[in-house]
Amino acid sequence: MKVALVTPRDTHSPVILPLACVNEHDEIQSDPSTISSLNYSQIPIPESSSNHLPGWHEVRELLDGRALLPDELPFSYKKLEPFIRRGYVHMQAGIHIRPRLKCTRCGNNHKHWFSRYACAWCDDACLYCRACISMGRVTTCTPLFTWKGPALSGEKTCVNILAWGGELSSLQQRAADRISQTIKQSRSAELLVWAVCGAGKTEMLFPGISCGLEKGKRVLIATPRTDVVLELLPRLRQAFPTAALTGLYGGSEERLSFGQLVVATTHQTRRFQDAFDVAIIDEVDAFPYRFDESLAYAVKKATRKNAATIYLTATPDDRLRKRCENKDAVIRVNRRFHGFPLPIPGFQWCGDWRKTLLRERLPKTFSNWADQQLASGRQALIFVPSVQTAKAICKVLQQREPSIGSVHAEDPERKEIVENFRNGDMPLLITTTILERGVTIYGIDVAVLGSEDEVFTASALVQIAGRAGRSAEDPDGKVTFFHYGKTKAMHRCRKQILAMNGKDGRENGS
Image (cartoon, rainbow, N blue to C red; front, side):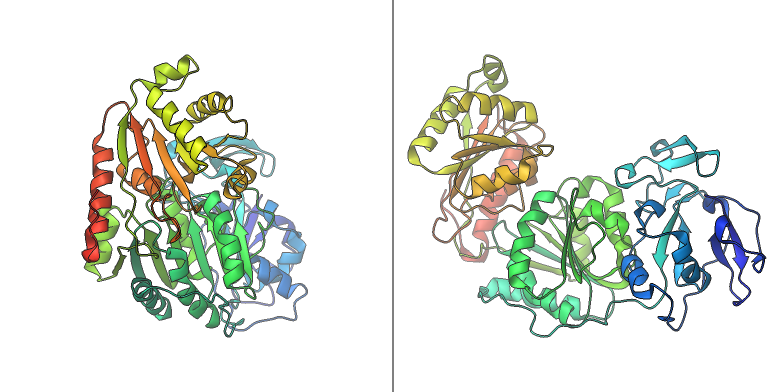
């Protein structure tokens, strides 16, 4: 797309317009070029609204807090033209060339993540960003459209929006109070909520979310994985039945919806810009958020200047912990909501399990455990290091019980499989690490086959162990790590859990 910097006849401020929208009354300030090549100053933000413009509410609701590609707009440039001319809609470069290459949407600035292709829009070889191409192609000639007029936030306020009638423990209440205090602040603030698995982090958020919504703030809950979004949505709908709630994840039908409360995967936050007054980042230490700097960039870009940021995790990394501790911005919750200690994992040697699986057999110790589990009638999650391993184990176990299943990140029936397991229709579910966190299923035991594999870090094993014993009625779920040699990660996991159980005077004798 070719654009030009022009000064419309009825204004004194230059704006960028698609070349097709320039007319003879415009004072042209630049030669036609791609938007990334254009050197221009920031377009002034209008001080007053012009809601008499046709489509005002539709355009504002779509673009306020977002940065969208032309292909993502449900209307034409002609409809946007009066908004662009008056400065209410801003066209910004999708890729900045100077002072160095950078994708505006995802923050990618690594040269090897950019490529060229023959572009039909500008008849040139355009650069595009490969890092976020799964969400649509950002190129040197495609703009991102954003809203620069009066914001929606603060216009819609709610009263007594929280319908949840549960009670928080004293430790939960202390954390909930700190969360609410952080959200109430009018300046930028952050808080690390360092809480053990099963502490009831979601419920601790309810008072703070309620406070933010009642003040007209936009609230984002960002989580690294789709499974967690699907887990949180029904719980939040029940707690906030009158709130405008949107769930965004890969394949979501609400892709262009934007409620006052948004639950999204961290990847989906790339479409937002200056959108949220509160950002709650769940499982901040989890893959892929921890290992993909573009996701942290996306969440930061999605928040406003004075936003409150809440980090939730049971296993914070040293950098985040130290930064928040230096600001006195850490609250710890060292007990589960029901007061019982975390299950201590047992270690069980199982020999060369990979070699055994090649013969379509299971290691003897693991096979005996599976038989005992089936006989007991207790459900169990079985974590394995790879999709291939999950399928191989499932094939063998289904000879004993056909209803046993497996699940992994790319499984198209992933949502239905997890729901079947939750409903008790499946005795054993073999899974990769996608279910290591954020998914709550009561009354289950947990096993890891191949816990020595490098994919099972100490923090991952802590999270996996935390899947057991989640309910007050059944707090003693058993956790077993089947291994072909103990690792430092396994020992660190056990040590961390013992230390957590020892806090606040509660020591477990295991």
